[in-house]
View 1 (cartoon, rainbow, N blue to C red):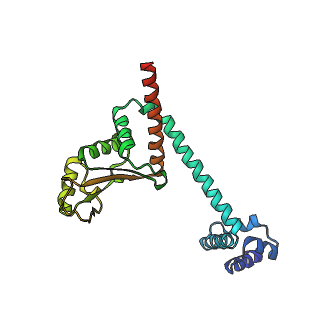
View 2: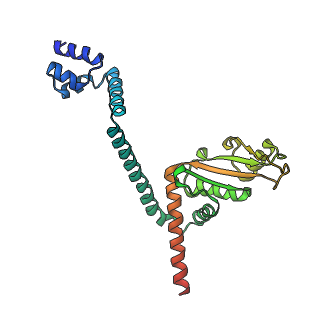
View 3: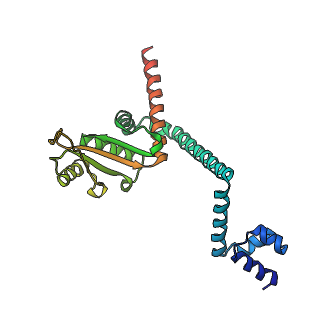
Length: 227
């Protein structure tokens, strides 16, 4: 092994950056990068040095935050652009239209939480929305979770079995329930409230965009028909 490489390894393991090794030994940084690119210990050191530089430089931290913000903004715009393209093939499908209308009325609209989430006390409505996710949008059933909001006199296991039977969604998709505690211990309905959700910012961006496109499409058709 070259003596200068042995010294470079020694300095690198001591925590020297490529720039410092270059200044010390006169070895090009490209050569150093080639020598150490397959060394896990060198990559770990590189990551640590990068973090230290970033944390010690508020301008670098701000630049990183702004770069991340711009990157996510572009990604979200790409999601919406994809929704526009896909809408043309979906806009005449009854299940697609029904699912969007359900979400428009009952779904969570907060885009930042990255959840496609709908709450309702009607198991048949939840079943239809489940079919919308799986059949119309191609969401894997394993990604869909459900949780119940129950009144104190409703039995968790009984309600989960009932919701699972009517919606035809496996019990394994159900998560922990929330019991409402208050001055009214008796149930307000026979089933409680079910929340069905998929964690996906991409899908959330698309669903919100599709609702907007559906409204404009229906509005145009109505105005054209009744003018």
